[in-house]
Image (cartoon, rainbow over the protein chains, first blue to last red):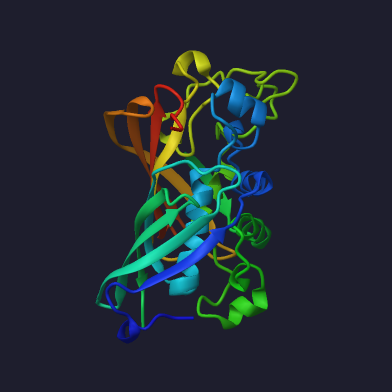
Length: 135
Length: 181
């Protein structure tokens, strides 16, 4: 799939539910694949009794990875030129996340997107921008 | 972070893609990828983070050289990290285990991450990564006390010395765990 500049308009949006009812197991998978074994993400006694959190929470980079999946599904494979987010709230097991890209501008074969990921309560968990090559 | 050899391997990309729930065949199937625009299995946009696997001194991986790990065993935590994390190692949190040093045990969190893709890594590439500190700044947060932000810029280069991805990570150390209210 490739995006065509001629078919894009400022304000266009693309949304995906990137995870439903996030499982601790998926956080464990991400720890294993990424190599980030910080126990706050996977180790309940550590997260609650040592670090002081209500439970384990997802790596910010898992949230960004899920958000990136929405982006690559939208813009196509290998087309991103930039992608950045701020992690604005933590993501916990049980969360359902929805990611949205909005077209901000189109110029010189590039589309600039704003990106947001929110949880089931409408709280934004990641916010940023991306840029991709378009036809 | 300094990584001398980050080989981009198909099985690693497969495992990473699974972990982010991505079934796009560009990450799994060599034949499919050969016919797709990139022409080869490529890495998902956030994959270079997994270069941590190849960083010999990465602080968030249990050690195999007898230095204890901070996770729970018979007690909620069984080890105290010996090494101070280097400023460039702040990505993805930097030592939540060291309660004594951090006060509330809230420790380091990942505040922001940005990537510039000069191209996308593909299977067969062998990358190096080198990091340099960026900006440092502070502010006071309502939910977690004093916040210290540290930026780190990592350049991923390929086997020909060409820049592939520039990654900017912002880590934040909090005075206390983030208030959930």
